[in-house]
Image 1 (cartoon, rainbow, N blue to C red):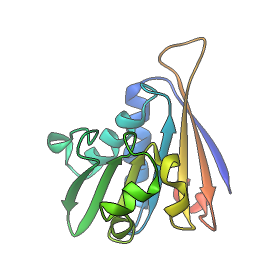
Image 2: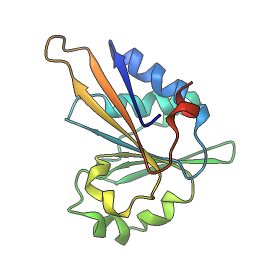
Image 3: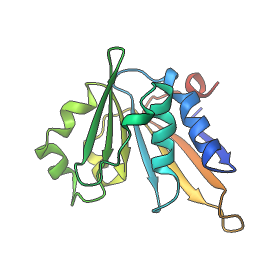
Image 4: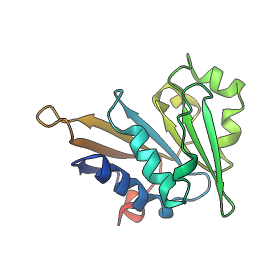
Length: 152
């Protein structure tokens, strides 16, 4: 399976979806979160981190670029690369090393697409024009990543 669509009716749905995805990921898995401001990317990260009991440590990495979390020998890196010009700035901060050191959640990851590993997941968040609470999450497998194992 290369594509999957999830309809979120509200922020709780988005967080629950992320929470259900979290235990299925492994070290070196990379998830790119794409979408307009306010489309649900950060809520997804909040739900993901809640699975690991890290809800009290969540902060936006907008100005620091990356927040690092560790739980039970699992490193989780939450990037917000919105302020980067391109992938060379990501590499300058040692970003490529993070990609092989833990689970990476990268908001605005399309900016650094050229330095991403061959296999990664992209989640595109879209707002619904008819209901301000609904989000359409288009999950796309890149490379040989098999979504069937992840989403079933």
